[in-house]
Structures are given as structure tokens and as C-alpha cells.
Length: 494
Ligand code: UN1
Image (cartoon, rainbow, N blue to C red):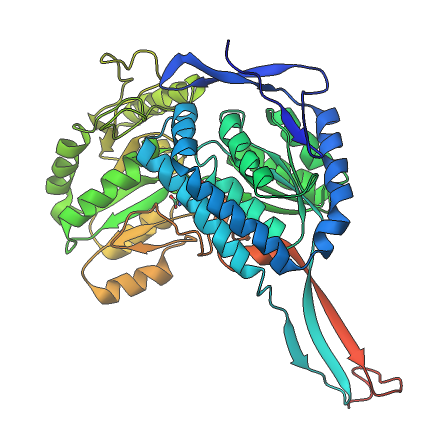
């Protein structure tokens, strides 16, 4: 009998109020049931928010470096458990073990980085316009933060949000994706074991209705969300209406530009990793390849040879390059987009179907896929597919490449392969994206650098790095007038 797991609220493990559960299966072998998780609703969210509110005064008053000590212990424990957690993550969401180890490593890096920030959390001191007056800004926590995440980075991405939130003195209600509840739970277990006090982090499992209850709850001060553009828009509307702060990380249609002077062997490694790593299921995945006409044919052939040799399978088995898609809906969506691409007149060069045989029949496997003759404006060139489908667009110049790269509603990551330094620097400015990689693929953001997108990918906030602390803190401006008399700003200094 597969195990039955619980929510973690106010320091105790508990079932959902109604007792309902949902099943969590291995997407590579669907007969492997990982367990049953609470199908939470508004009542569970309410309990979790109450617990987070009660824990807030003590946690926010604790000196930040002391909160940092706990974050450091979290980093140590994640390091100890890296392999074991990665094994369970692969089993739950499919990407190969070497990738889930990387996912945990990103969480470790985030923990140590957040711990170090607890000794900074800088404010400013600034001259006053008046004599005998002192001006400064300090940071205060926002309050209770609702964290809603996707399944594709089921440990790293929650930590991008939870760790800086905790470092800054906030408390948290965390709802992992219903496709990765176990990974979320294993992360929370690490936090508990590292000494995060009861109520400071609460775990509520469930689907969209649990997430919606969290967004709607008046006791939640801020929402940080990673997921689809559709859900993100709804969250933005609700948070706007309720005057909550919100950070959205949504879709991408990330371009890689390969110029005529590029090192094609380097670009080949980059595109294989960017497009087919994580089965294309990253918000940073390379989904459009914009190639200069002089190298188009030769480069596409180089990709075909290597992509068709990628080994699909259960990611905890040796030698697997690419795991399955996450679930049946994803398989249907990717299949539908292949059909759309064909109908739009693009050429399906390889892949395009579900992968079967050789132990794959029980999983949601899809072959690495590539379309050529893709024209700007086609749906497969504009819409996020979130699968191993690469659309190739042939261009005649750098200017055309940039116009194609920018011709979508998204702007998360981007990349350019060129040996021309001047062109690389131009691209840094010309490409509309939150990230530009030069001579590297679109994926592979580092934990201590700002992460986020422009246009409809985000709403202007950044995760990661020093900028995420602007999201998780409120600035307070403090004036100390020690002149002993009333000094009127803008009046007495003229
Ligand atoms: C995501 O897909 O949501 O840059 C995050 C990368 C990873 C994070 C991806 N470090 O590809």
C-alpha cells in the first residue's frame, strides 16, 4: 500500500479538513504510486495562514543573522540528503538523476546565499536637506507570504522564494504543485529538521483551489508564484484587487541565435541541453533556434544526428539523457502542438510522436522533436509548448535575428552564439529578455543572480540574487530630527 502523507501546519502533521486525498504517480512508470497527499481546501489554507500569522512576531523580531544560522543548517542538511532527495524527485517528476541533483544543488546554493544576506539586508543612510537631522531607510518584513510553485524544479524554485522570505523575517504558507507534492514535503522536512520553528513554514498540499484560497486569503500579505501565464494573470487580478504584493514567473519562448561565425560544436552542445534538457520543461528552455542562413543546413543536420541518439527512460536508471513529460495533459498538449506545426506548414524534421517500446510504454515519453521552415508568427513559434519541441527559424542577418527573437509576448531567457565581441555586446542590449547568455544556452541561471523576465513573462520582480530581497521586504524611511525644534522640509531649507 503506498504511503499516505499529510499537511504540515503550525508544527504538526495533519490531514486535509475533509480527509480527501489525491494520488501522486511516477510519470516514467505510472503503476509506481508514490503516495496519497491531502487534497486541501480553504479550511486548511485558513489554518495554515493563522499559524503563519501567530509565528510572525517572534520570527520577525529574531535577529536576521540568527535566522541565517537556520538557513545555513538547511544548506548543510540538503547537502547530506542530496542524493536521496534527488532520487525521490526523479521518481516523482521524471527528469534524470543528474538533473535532480542539480536542482537540489541550486537549493543548497540558495540557502547559503540567503544565510549570507542576513548579515547584509542593507538600508541606506542619506544626507538630510536640513541641519541636525538624520535620514535612513531600513527593511521590514512584509508578513505572511504565500508560495505557489511548479513541479519542474520542485525543490530549487520553492527555495528561491522560501529562503529569502525567511531570511527577511517573513513567515510562509507553501503550496507545492500537485504534480510534485512529495518533493515539496521532503524540502519542508529538511526545514523542520534544521530548526525552523513551528508555524514559520506551513505546507498545504493540493491543486488550484488550494492555491486560489491562499491568494484570496486576507491574512496573506504577498504571493510569489511560478507557473502558467493563465494562472499568473488570475493571481495578478486577485492580488491587485486585494492590494497584495505579488511576484509572477510565467511562460517563456526563449530564443537561441546562432550567427554565421558561431562555434557550431559549442552551439550544438548548447542547443541539445537547452532544448531537450528537462524534456524541454523549463521556463528557460530553448524553444526557438534562430539560425543564420549560411550555417542553417549544416547545423540542423548536426542537431538531428545527436538528438535522435538521446536515450529516453526512467531517470533513476543509468545512462538516461531525457525523462518523460509530466503527465497525460502534457503529452496531449505537446502532441497537439506538433499537429498545429504541421498544419501551419512547418517541416517536421524528426520526432513528433510519443516514444514507446523498451520500457517506455508506461510513461509519458515524447521523442525529441524539431521543426524547420518555421516562420515568425506561427503558433509553434509564438506559444509555450513546454516539451521537447524546437522550432527553427532561418534568418539572413543579425538585425533579422533580433527582430525574430523579440517578436513574441514573452521575455525570460535568450542566447546568442557568435565569436564577434561587438555583436555579443549589441545583443545584450537589443534582446528583450530578463536573461541573455553569450555562447551558452538559455538555461542554467545561477542562484545568486537576479532571475526573471520582461513582457508577459513576469510582472517586473526578480527572484534570486540581491534583488529578491526587495520583494520580500518593505522599505521604511526613518527621519531623526535632533535639532530640538520643528524644521519644515521644503520650507525651512529655501
Ligand atoms: C524554471 O524552469 O522554472 O536556469 C527554473 C535554469 C534553472 C532554473 C529554471 N536554473 O534553467
